[in-house]
Image (cartoon, rainbow, N blue to C red; front, side):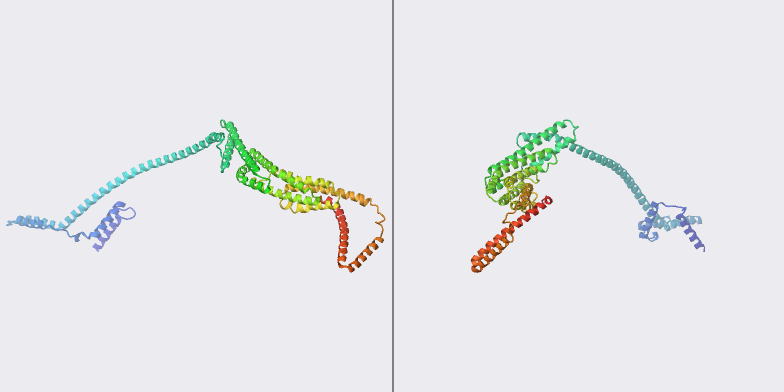
Length: 508
């Protein structure tokens, strides 16, 4: 029981050393790690009493010899014996404790080694702390340097942006000398897609100075840029005019040939005209130059087409039939209008009032040829046929299907139709007033039913002749049918004229 109590007290004492709350001998984390390392070492080498402690045979032999030497030859009394025994007892005790002493020495060596390791660890920790401190200093300096570098880079970018802005602003002023020198030396090329770049740069410079009028000498530079732009536009106008004049000079009387010449000229002139058309909304100067180019084009075309159209219409005017003249002249002018519009679209992409007036002048020639004939025309049938030709064959079938190309011809045809309708109304009123309202029948007109009997007799005689001779009968029947057709045609025309007269206010 006593042993059990002692063991329990020992366990309690050990527990109190490391109890969680208020321990008697608390250990730090470092000390715990050292104890755990020692336990691990003990497990690996085993208990100390099982260690093979090497014994020095020479020492034992020397001790044995010493004991022999120290052993007295004669113990004379008990005091000598007790002294000898006490001495030997101490030797025995030393020999018994030798294992423990040796193990203690071993532990002492291990402790010294551990202390050495701890010293080295402390040195390492000290070095690490110094390195950490130095690293922190270097890191702070590096961060500071990085921040300064970022600020320098930011300042550099701002300076670059300011440099580019200054360069761009200076370019608005420096570019003037380049344009002036190119224009003065006649080295400025407006072909090979250079014209678009030149015009865009000039437009950009002019707009820039217009928006920055507060800059020094901005008005002077803007005025000089305007001069350069007008000189470039004059150069474009000159190139277009010379190209059109050259095509007109090379063209012959053959219509197809001079169309081909102008089509080949359009290949070189089209980029110049397209550059003007694309910028008509930028400045008014572009629109003015474009109109001048259109007028030059119309002038050259009219100098080629005008005489040919006049000569052709003069040849057609020899026809006595006004309806045939109108059909032939209109067909010719329709063909000319379509060809001219197709050629115009190869030079220009937008319609213009200049070209419309040009086609209107060309088409007015048919109006000048037909209107004098209409004024002196008396037959209602011919006037009605002219109205039908103008309204149905020309305006409805031709002009309405291609209004853009035939707009000028349609305007002339409508004006001519209006004049023909006025003449038709006038002649119809005159006919109603003289031949209907003022009609006085002759005795022959009132010879009814004698006239009907006569016609019946004629028909019977014709029938008898038909039975007599087939060929003669056929000829007679043909004459009779022609007479009947003529009478029916006259009656139908009279009805048509009256109906047209009644419907004219509605149609107009």
